[in-house]
Image 1 (cartoon, rainbow, N blue to C red):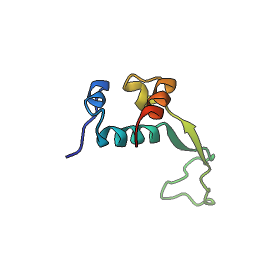
Image 2 (cartoon, one colour):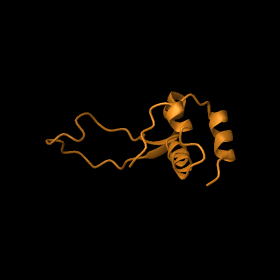
Image 3 (cartoon, rainbow, N blue to C red):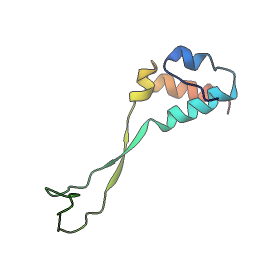
Image 4 (cartoon, rainbow, N blue to C red):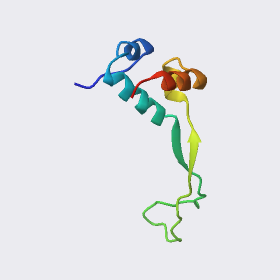
Length: 86
């Protein structure tokens, strides 16, 4: 059964279990998002678009939304990761 983490207390209830470490790894993965920074012309992607194909330009960006929602700062989360046994 999957653990549902909606709050910091939900996460804390897993402390000391393999599920805690697994969840921390998933949260760490949520801290970076990929953003397409290519510029697309008007109507690109529409069925009648007849222009050239644009190659996406992927850029990694930090996104702390998920860990912030759970009450972590980046520094606190990194310290928690360092203390977690994997």
